[in-house]
Length: 189
Image (cartoon, rainbow, N blue to C red; front, top):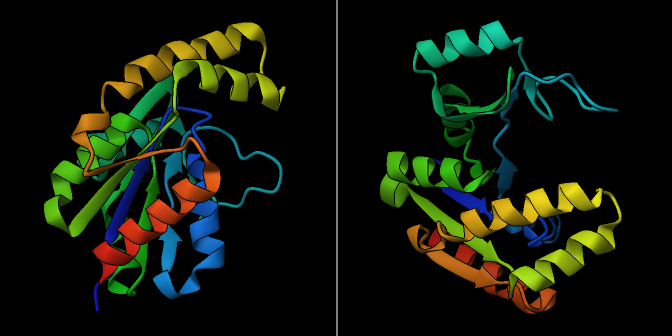
């Protein structure tokens, strides 16, 4: 049976990756697999081509854009692209995998538009921008300027929430995990 599609988007610091990781690790019965995206950046640490990302040169990426091979893509910085190949998603679906997209809000909206009812889109929302600031500062991984940039971007991203099928407010992580699990089980049948 062909796999279904689950799109998860959220502002940075909302708990999206934590929730998705929990669903994938603790609920193997859901047969969730990440969509393997492309990027034009260099691999970091132990990242492997074809596993973590497909690593492309900027010119290769532009050629695939020109050929219409992407479901969605974004040029985050000059020559720093991220995107999802249509053919890769279809390969995963044909293998019976339920494909999880951990993407930005624009990408999430575009993928939902492309697949319609074959996809479910989830927006993980922080309880407030103030709480988001507290979480980002608590990570202690960013400069105050970088945190402010993330918060400015988050305010913009929050305007996309109504375009998603479901909004899960991550006020309490355990509650948010259970809500996401319930929504996925309902969708996957």
